[in-house]
Length: 71
Image 1: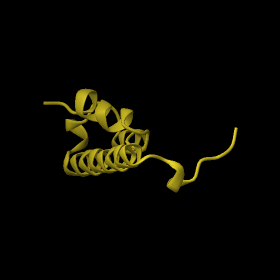
Image 2: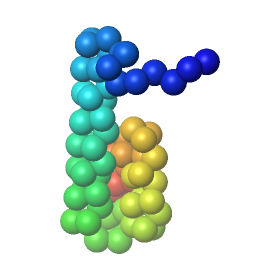
Image 3: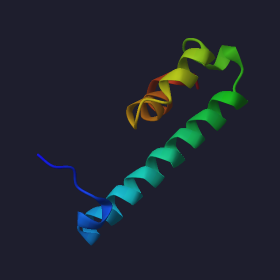
Image 4: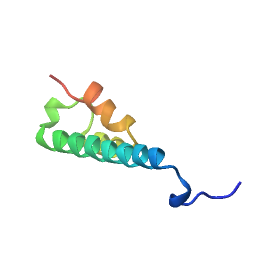
């Protein structure tokens, strides 16, 4: 199995990879911003734990928005 170079990847797949990367960064930035603006009483668990979890690709930020916030 040989490594593929960026130039070996098809144009459609490159666009999808870049879009997924942008989405991941946007989710993480949104989650980190939301975490920073909440008081500890508005968070399920520790804020530091949620900050660390937000670095887990896609799953961390999505988990924050689904389970981390108290409304």
